[in-house]
Image (cartoon, rainbow, N blue to C red; front, side, top):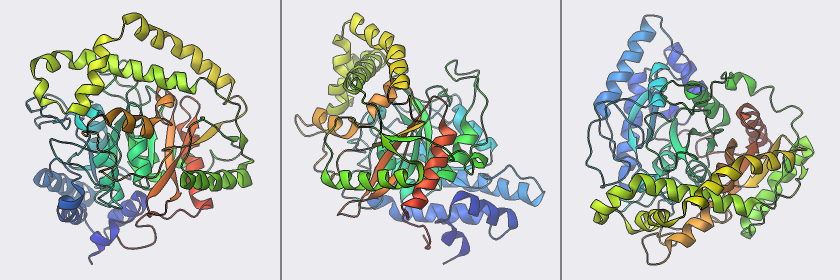
Length: 472
């Protein structure tokens, strides 16, 4: 096994050091990643397309810069890949759908441009649920995306390829989008650290929307530090996105060593029934947090169900506003799952939508004054059930789509409505060896604390990802 192939299992900081010291080239590392992606594509189906020539050209340019003494930082020469909902200039974007005829992009999404400026290599667009709408990774148009630990099980969605590609060691990190759990669900199901930032922390310019009032862009990675490095590169204000907050970007990686100290941690009961395996793993995680941080039960939050319902209203109405014309002109191009989840938004009264929008600020204040009043970080499982098989979670089966979505997103969607930062991290494995995740919920723009706490808790529970301590 070559040094570059072995390095596919390392964290980004370790690979960056090796690249900087010349242990191997970015071209060799990128070729190794491409080889692995090609080898596992038939079983995982993580990529929409591998753009090998472009990726290798980027890697060679990174190597030339390094030879001249130019170094852009820890992402210089690192192979990444991203959900196919981000525009790339002159390259088609499918959004996992056949509704729109693929046209060359007219611009590059801000976040992809920022990663390129940091020196990252882009292997190509990743799989996703059609139109960024679904929690499973199922896609009737491009084929289902399998879980990196067991391809017969769902990968989570809608950033399915992101979870599978990072969990399977095909790339070191990925960007996804999250409207009601679409970063956190594949993160949890593939044993990753997956961050939905505060609404407005990361630009969405050039990112295909599901619901503008809820959508967030964020990273999926194999360690908290890797997640911090990716967030560092993409966060910040953007003239192309008026909703991107003009707030300074901390040095997230540097703050990993200090931000967890003194954190007040509490366990939040969302009144959602948990599978016994999830409940046991969560209890162990809470015990670890209690031992170090004195974690206790958070104040109850009676409006969690209302948050879920109002997030659903916003998502359906805003999606229907975007898709209404296409649904009338070419309904046959939609999967039944996406059509049936979007069409009801055409019938929601405007007053119901505006009530959901208007109540948001007041409910957020109540949440900050309630469960978060005596805590800096709240704990809550990411998914209440073990990772199901693709057959069990088939959204195209008659009458199943709404039940599948409700079961998988019950614990993630309320925090999207509140706009808070949430980091899903691994908390153990179920009897099938599949990962289970826990959400760390923070205050607005509290991402640094979440990342630092996740790094500490991962060490406390001795979490070992698929490649930690071994060759990939």
